[in-house]
Structure formats: C-alpha cells, structure tokens
Length: 390
Image (cartoon, rainbow, N blue to C red; front, side):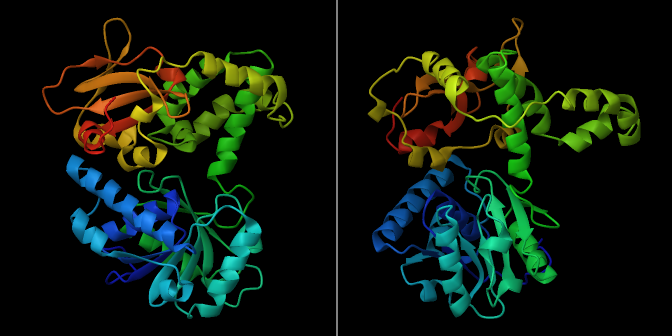
C-alpha cells in the first residue's frame, strides 16, 4: 500500500553518481520512480549507468532485486545527464550525493535554489553537516532538509531526516512518506544537532572502545567481540531504550534498579581521545598481524564496487531466507546451508566471505576469527556472474 502523500510515482533527481548516488537511484527505481542521475562529468555518468546495470542484473539473478519490477524495467527508469537544470526539471525530489564538503554542497544548493520550483524537495545526503549551514540564505529553505542514509542505502534502510530551523513540516512529511515508499526506515530528528543521532551514538561507542584499549583494559580483538558477539547482536533487533524497557518490569523499574550504577560508571569515562599515536598503531597492528592468508592474487578478489552489488545485510538474509545461525556442540557459531571461505580483501584486510548456497548445501562452521574479521555476505551466483572465482 502506498504511503500517504504520494498518489503515483513521479520524477526524482539524484545529484552525484558515486556509490551513495547509485544506491539511491536503485532504490527510487525499485519503487517505480523515474530517476535522472546527474554528474558534472559525463564519463562518470556513463560509468555509473554501466555499474548500475551490472549490480541490478546480479541482484535479479540471485533473487534479491528489490521491488515488483524486473531489472530491465527498473533500468529503463534511470537515465543520466550532466546538465543540472535538465536533471531537476519535473522532479518532485532532489537527493544530493556529492562529497562531504561544506563549500561544495553550499555551492550546489545555491545552484539548485535558482532553478528549483516551489514544490520540489531539496534533500542532502550529508552525514554530519548541519542544515543551518548547508541551506543558509536559500530562497527555497522551507523545501530543504537532510536525508542522511547509512552507506549503502540500498542495503541499509535507516534514513535520518534532519530539518533546517525554517524547513516546512510538510517537507519533512513528504520526505518521510517517500522514504517509506521506497522501503527505507526514516527517523525524524525534531531539531538539528551536530552529528545527528546515528553518528552521536556511533562516536560515543568508538570513543569508549578507544579508551578501554588505550588504558590497557582489553585487547582490540576482544573489544570488538564485545560488540560483534554481544551488544551488536542485541541492538541489531531492538534499540537501547527498548532493551532497557524489556530488561526489567518496564522503563521505570529499570531506572529504579540500575540508574545509580549507570551514573557511577559514566562518571569514570575519560576525555575525548586523540585517535592517534600508540593506540592507533596498536589497533592497526592487531588487525594487520591477524590477516588471513591470501589464497591467490588480490586481482582474483572482488573489487569494492563489485562487492557493493552483492553485499547483503546478515540480518536481512536470516529474516528472509529462513536460514539459521546456531551454535554447535563445541560452542562454535554455525550457519545452515552456507560454506565459508576466509580470505584477504583487496587491501589485505581480512574478510570472512559467506557463499550463499541453495537448499541441500552442506553446513559450514564459522571461522573462529569471526569476531576479528569483517563479514561480507555474497551470493555465490552473483560472484560467478561477475567472473570472480575465489
């Protein structure tokens, strides 16, 4: 059922043809919107369209293409251009995806402000730039907001909607409805704040993780296990506030029981780390020394742009396929119907590559280094289609 605020798909302009821009284009096309993908360099546009075709064909082949339309139908909705006025003409929504540089973005929005009508939403994908700085002085400021995705948005549904102080409520409502329509999970920030919500939470975790390693409390590898095998598994399904509410007899009971302990611990938190020096070297060496052996030339491994086309969130895979993650009699994590290969990534970083197999495939035990590696989930058929043999 369509979300309130949209009677029929219209046109969307995506400004910037990098990974985030391409991912947005795929999302909008999956919901039936006509997309104009803009880049100032025509060669970039051409390359982006080639990449989109490859990614969407691989996803269709493996059964993970979003939407009701086939890959060819979705691709027919996406066109490229290197003329900004042409890209924006007739659009109901503009999604900016240029590099995270304030002056560059301000210059772009000044151009958009001159050619936009009074109905189009002007949205930025910025991860940390405040709307009050991005959109200051624009005539169409009421139509502007930040819609910050988690990279890449085709695979991660969260979008933070952050308004300028003068953004019209209707602009936020329209963008919320659009994001719901394309399958995203929008959240509304009621006012702007430095770092928005996601990065404020993320940076708080990173800062304390850094301090614990820097102060010699825990090793880098064990620290990451605290998240990957503990908090991360919990927070992948419910957030911190819901966890508090469910942990006792509701939120009031939780606060009554644990507030003093939380405050005592929080008072021991140190200053903001420098994120450099001996601790940076220690963390780097920990992961560099624990690299998995390379099975062959690095050229035989998927390139970053190819990985993005077949990367799937583990949570989504488990929910939609019925495959299960369990523990065997030795306590090791185990995936049903998957085979695992540990390899070095394009830059020598360790990865556990999970090759999806069909029903009847053998069960493979997760490598014991799971907590110390990045896990990328690939579709075996997609990798074969890409000609990448591991």
